[in-house]
Length: 375
Image 1: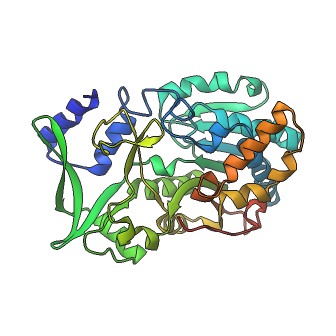
Image 2 (image 1 turned 90 degrees about the vertical axis):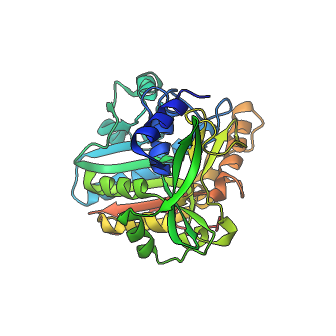
């Protein structure tokens, strides 16, 4: 039993069955026992999942090239300052790698950069000044748990949207029903109840993809709200979001009848299921790329590109950073590059999306290939 099991069970007894989104929010972000809140770092070889940041600094160095280009576009649109915001920043490793790259590519931008790291976990926020220690004398830095207002610059969100809570609905013989979580004898169990949240129906109607009977799908209202919030926070600039996901038409099929919500521990799916050990496992679901684009358009964002990570990193000069040397550093860079662009791995499962606001329609280097592999 995890510490969150009796907490969730008590909430159900007091309020009735909870939505999947409500349970996920507790399991992931409870201030004391939540999965992300209770540790400064969850990814990497010793963690439960592996991200592009865990491969090494190469990923951040390449993102820096795209950010420098974005900063130029913001400047051309009439702004003299540039505010870089990383949302879901963890302990700050990606921000450090990006700053290393920006300092090397554009010392001028580096010297006038303002950095904000947005992270809900207090444990992770506490680690950020140490991780970024090499840059604290050169970059105005702040850490917070919410997006700041009045951003003129860029928001970077790497594997943030898949970590936001989702509602889960299923098309049954009785119509659309929503999965809730009930309690019996201290144990948690799924319960199907009529779908009453009007926002869920509105989002599904907007997507226009019919859900076959017996198929279960996730509805990311939290992701839609976050995209809208990012639109309100940015006065002029860009949003760069990297995550794994699929189009609505690919998610609402019998091929994915059970949905995509999963629990992961030790780099494998937890056989006990997503309700088995709240607070002790990572809970994640595929991002609905169609829903994200629709939400972005409503929030005032202009879509500027969607590509596989492979094509994004390659277009930004990945191969130029590699050499044929046999030294340890050269070999490690080549191995890291292969991991970042591996088909079937990070290279094709991770999608990169760019949106702009009040910057026109610049052709960003990372999106020159414009190719997406269905997942």
